[in-house]
Image 1 (cartoon, rainbow, N blue to C red):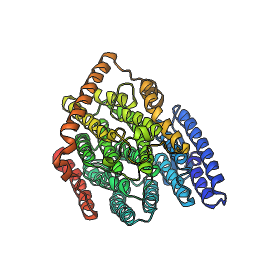
Image 2: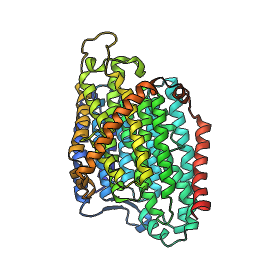
Image 3: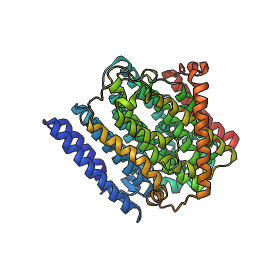
Image 4: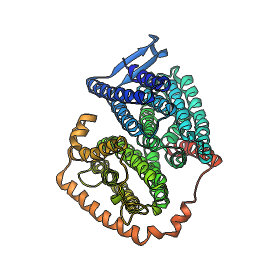
Length: 528
């Protein structure tokens, strides 16, 4: 029963909130989460033999249907694993019953999105997730957190109106909100009548993916003082993947609507802007948040190239990004806790002061910059394999930018530690998941081909000669990135001006309108 995977996290949440022995409750919940992760692994194995369907109410296309195929099962497995890491990390640092209640309700809503076979259920579950994330941002009740939480909530309230209007048009056109029935029905309709519902729904999806120009909610959610490292890890490593999942699913529903070139451009522009904005930041979490936007841009680009290798590489990058970005955010939480600041320029000597955290974070950095034999190198290899000359060059430039971002990030690791240079007490509840994620960045690189075959049933092989060429390009990029950062980026006056750029609520609303207009204009006047 697929309902098990939605109901169990909800039951864990209620148990954690009501059980009077808080420490025992958290231990029980972690063991339950381990069991849920194992169960999703077996769900994934079973989904490889064929689609698994559970009907809640036998009403045909009017009932609620949960479906698990090979793609959704991978996302669900990633979900339970990341939440397991976040739960272990939060064991000692977050003891409030409310926090744990919200964490597991959040997990249930994300799993529900991946399983849902109904467009209206997707709306309900995304709204549950929106409310939960808003409360987690508001959690510490600081003035900045209150402001950022309300901005996040209100901007999602605005964009969901586009989705509801799109659902109304879908139901009017095909008489159903069942995803698979609607896909079949749309295949027989004229493309011109699909433009408006497609533009409305993809505006909603674009914001959930955090693509240009509607990405400003993501750094606000990360940069607020109220968001813990575990929340940021799930938000960046996993929550944003629900938007990418919907992006793939809705493109299938509106199969006759061709926007490959449009989203190729959007993906490239998002990746470039994400790199520039990340380089301009000094707040640890904002550096990582804008880096996430850049990586999302790369994934959207790879999914829009139209090549099988690039598609598989993008899918694998979704998984690897979930691992190394979760590790980076969890590591940033330890660094902030140790130094009492988020300002990169004020943090030095992390290798001497917190060596285990720094080692695990370094593994994640090697993964995200595409170091040979690490996870990012494999996913980026396949993404670039199917790219044309121009797109290939852009991807290399974005990776050069990513290298510069993390050259800047690693300045925290060296130098003389400020204050007491003794090794402080290590919380192993935090360090164990951090180390596990860091090691996975290496394992998913060494066994990249086997992992892709196992996860996506795609027998892709790496050409040794081509991989050596990519390794050579990486070595040149690493030298160039370090040199360019040291002699230009570090003291660039233009980046200091870029850092001040921030959209308020009205600006975000205007950006939503601009994105919607761009989709409509592209389809109505350019593509058609």
